[in-house]
Image (tube, rainbow, N blue to C red; front, side, top):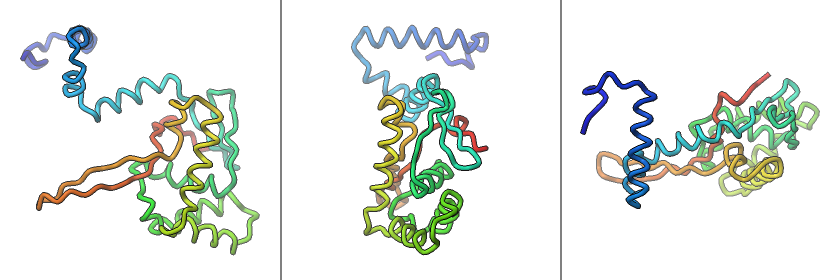
Length: 197
């Protein structure tokens, strides 16, 4: 196998041409399985994000917490303050959060809720946050479903998948060969597309 170290004269553009030629040969041979193995799933996800960037809109969050799709004619994504608070929490944590651990983010979620619902009764806010952070309550799933619905109404399903709070499973292996999974929820929208006023 010839590596770039052995051929330092190749420019990135020339390397891309060679990769394209090899991809075409593997496709002709019907070996997309080898192509996937060579690229790897993490790189495939990066390529998917790169491909989507041209179709994705910047998301501007104004000082008064209006959510605008800047490149879709400033179309507003209308949500209740509690939905906005949940969304802001997940935007602030690109690494993802497990729903069962939401109580660890209770104070942060409350701060977002206070900011988005300035005129709401403090007791009602506390009650809502209690429901959202209770792992035995379905409130967080209901809020995420509503968020998904408003983004899905504003764009195609593929684009919406970057804006919604979606599932991501992270596999862990300990030194004792024990395997466990984190069932994270996250927003995959590249953060350079998020504008906070």
